[in-house]
Structure formats: structure tokens, C-alpha cells
Length: 324
Ligand code: NAD
Ligand code: UDP
Image (cartoon, rainbow, N blue to C red):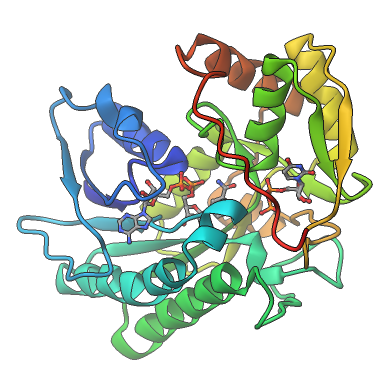
């Protein structure tokens, strides 16, 4: 297949590009490096079949040549990233998604949207199935991301209904692994960096809030299965093994062997209290389920952070959680 991956120089996108190249697809990665890193795809540069274009997908997205599938991942994903870029986040979820959809329709290509568990907001129903409509504050600090993704889902569905576009929606739950930016502000990358630097792990609130953490290789297998299918979804993709943030801190301390302490900080506004995917739909329709236990995934991730030359020395940009 000829696959266009928007956001391909980001954390998830770079792993997806790699997986597609591994099986012989040709990959065209489009990224503006706003939250991505050229280093993430540097090792793919010499591979036959890999092309990288630096471009903002909110401008026109014209790709010459064959396109069989479009994986639309371009969007800030970490809360500090989308808080810093609120308008760009809304633009990429709306205009960017429409440009990517148009590209797919022009080429009669498969289109897969990287949506998010954030469409469920601070869920009132637990665990979350795809038929739950969510609990999102439309004017809260997270809304620029949540509502952009909800709009992207609505737009993609309208393209499927009115233009018979071959659209599929994935709702991705918290995913971690190598190539997360040490200073992206997400909890796994932050805890690992802090543990390796001997700094206290910053726990927001009392740490009783939960997330369900999926290792990147598992997630990417699900994305590839969705690209290969004609199914509309939406499908939750995530690891249902739910942990409190406090438990995650202990797991990171164990995986790093660090003796860092804990620092309790105020909880950001609208921080979801609980999150766990029901994945039976993806299991039955895509034959997908996660395989990597968190202890193993953290070991790989810590190994990568350690091996990265500047993994613990990147310029420190203290980012306060929104609402503190
Ligand atoms: P990331 O920030 O590492 O990657 C996003 C990429 O998109 C970056 O390389 C960035 O430069 C690029 N980008 C952003 N705006 C762009 C634009 N206008 N034009 C071109 N490129 C642009 O984040 P990630 O964790 O890899 O997330 C990838 C996708 O998956 C996002 O759409 C995100 O919403 C979704 N997702 C991720 C997670 C997760 O846990 N990682 C969870 C849910 C959903
Ligand atoms: N979190 C934390 N300390 C940090 C960063 C995040 O306790 O240094 C918490 C955050 O408040 C949230 C959870 O960890 O409850 C997951 O945060 P992340 O930003 O990784 O993902 P999201 O909130 O988007 O699910």
C-alpha cells in the first residue's frame, strides 16, 4: 500500500511509519514538527519507500501519485502541548482533518482517524464503551483538544455517510513507549525522566485518578489492522489494565531502580478521574488485543530513555499543569 501518515514524525506516527515500512508498504509522512521531532524518523530516511514532507496539514494537502490509505495522526496530544497551542489544536482537528479526508476521497483511499479516549471527557460511565457519548466541558481548558477530536469524528462520519468515504475511527487510550519526549508533560514520560534524574515524581492531586496504559507496539498493531480493514468503528484501542497515578509512580520507581520521592501538586482543572476502555469491539472486529504488560513496557521505555544521549539532560521547561 501507499500510505500517507500525517503526524508521522511524532511519537505514535513514527512507530506506525516504521511498522508499515517493515511489511513493505510505501510511506509518505507529513509533519510540521510542531510537537514532533525529525530524530523520530531519522533512521527511516534511507529506507526505500519512505518519503518525508515538512508541511502543515491545515494548509492544502496535495499528494501526487498513488494513495491507498491515509492515517491522520497530526495533532498535539499531550495536555501541555495543546494548552500551549489551543488554536492550532482546533485548526488541525477541523481544517487539518478535512484536508486529510479530501485527500482520501480524491484517491478513493482508506482513511483512519486517530481519535482519543478524551472524547469521553471526565466519564460518568466506567469503564468506557464506544456507545457512551461522554462528559466534556466545552469551555474548559481541555476542550480545545476534546472538542477538536469530537468534531473530527463527526466530520469523518459525515464524509462516510454523504460521500461514501471509507472512513474508520480509532479512540486511542493513553499510550506510552520509546520516542516520547522527556519533557512532553505526559505522566509516563515525566515520571521516567524525573526518576532517572533523581527528582521527585510530581503527582497531581492525590494520585487516585486512573488511566489505562497501552504499550506503543500493541497500539500500532491495532492501527495497522484498522488501516487494512473497511470497518467504520469507532473502536477503543487501549490496554484495559487500569492503574492509579500513584500506582504508576511505584511501577516507574521499580522499573528505574530510582529512590526519588513523591511531590504532590494540585490537580489540573477537569482532569478525568477514571479511564478504562472496553475493548471487546476491537477484539471481535479487528482481532486485536494488547499483549505487553505494563512492567515489560516500562522496562523497554526506561531502557530507551536511558540510552538516549540527552534523555535526562534536555532543557528543562517547567510546565505547570493548567488550573494550578
Ligand atoms: P505527538 O505530539 O508525538 O505527535 C503528533 C504529531 O503531529 C507531531 O509530530 C506534530 O509535529 C504533528 N502535527 C501537529 N500538528 C500538525 C499540523 N498542523 N500539520 C502537520 N503535522 C502536525 O503525539 P502522539 O502521542 O504521537 O499522538 C498522535 C495522534 O494520536 C494524535 O492525533 C493524538 O491525538 C492521538 N492520540 C494519542 C494518544 C497517546 O497516548 N499517545 C492517545 C490518544 C490519541
Ligand atoms: N499527571 C501527574 N503528574 C504529571 C503529569 C500528569 O500526576 O507530572 C497525571 C494527570 O493529572 C492525569 C494523568 O497523570 O491524571 C495522566 O496525564 P497525561 O497528561 O499523561 O494524560 P491525560 O490526562 O491526557 O490522560
